[in-house]
Length: 208
Image (cartoon, rainbow, N blue to C red; front, side, top):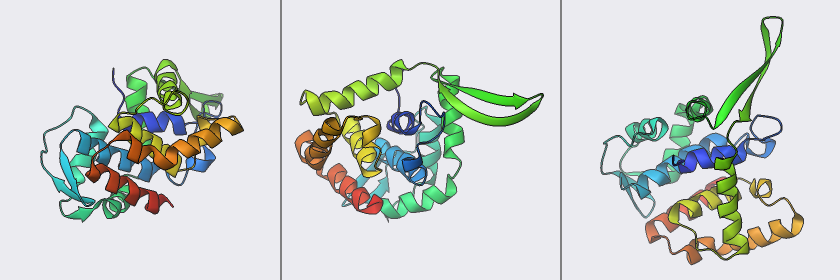
């Protein structure tokens, strides 16, 4: 069972103790997930990215509901950052879909606190931590073992870095310093395509 980049990002952005999105990611989680989907569609050859401009090449479904929903809404000839902004407003509730998909796959589970029959609060529990643990281990291998990341891991690392939740993976101060150094060079050292590199740099400026 393979996780999409968006699902991987979401698991990292979800506070395991609180069962909700980390405070640092609350404002960026939707555009981050949308960005992850667009870049994964590029890796799946569903779209091209020429100088950051999207061209839809193949509208055949991927089998992933969230990726397919994004694919249906993509517009050719639009710059990736403009597309992220536009789709983020259309997919404000994308977290609901992510929670549903990850729950169906047994990765997350919903926990409700009730008073008698009245729901007071809701949180997402990590039902199968192995998936998130694999992601964390892969990210740490890039930093501590100089492992060359795949294009998908490069995208994931960059989005985590750009949205200021790198410390969720690298919690010790020295580890975080090392991870930030790797983040500055990961695009060049990973050997991703020029098209992907240009798009990642555009997103870096967007998330700022």
